[in-house]
Image (cartoon, rainbow, N blue to C red; front, side):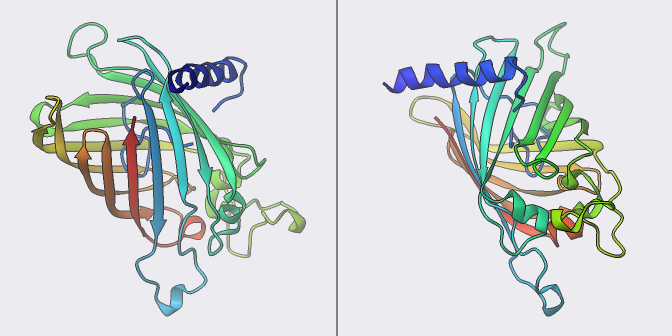
Length: 285
């Protein structure tokens, strides 16, 4: 029954994608999806991401103290060596002490998909990894319907880690793709209107860059080699929901189970508040 379930779900995702129902968090470096990694075929991934304040000053009381907890499931769906694809779905928990748009994100789902080629797939080992994807595709019009399309190039820098870079373009109709998370001419009833001093200008495009460096190589009992520790950092431009970045450390308990922690900063403090601390659990199976 377990093998049957694994074969059916990728087919469902693929059929949805083919019919134009585009698919929230794909494979990520840290805060952004600025990585050329794609889930291998039939390998499932569960991720639980938390972002919260370690403390708040008196002046910060009432500002966003935490982002919605993200619980995601991703799977690789193409059985090819030189062409990989992953699809995923994320559930966002409630965020009561957050920007009104982020509160609206609570108890919602987001979808994602990503197609990519690994390094050296064409024209020799020098050829970089290439990815195109879509993420943060939600079902709440003008809020979670960010529908962000991205293109990335990734390359290993010999013994100095890996770097990934590219650009993104999101739906300008989503308030989370606008400065301050609001619209200037929205109705009061919608809850999306700008307050005095807020611009609501479109900020739905930008660039992304990510870097990771693994060290302390070990082998498990089966002879699989992996890095026990990985340093990761990334950044996305744009004064919107995804604009920002951070750096932190992954600790791999096994090659398939890791815990990431570190600080994250944001470009738009009205939407996301001040910097947060993140703890992220990742499991492949």
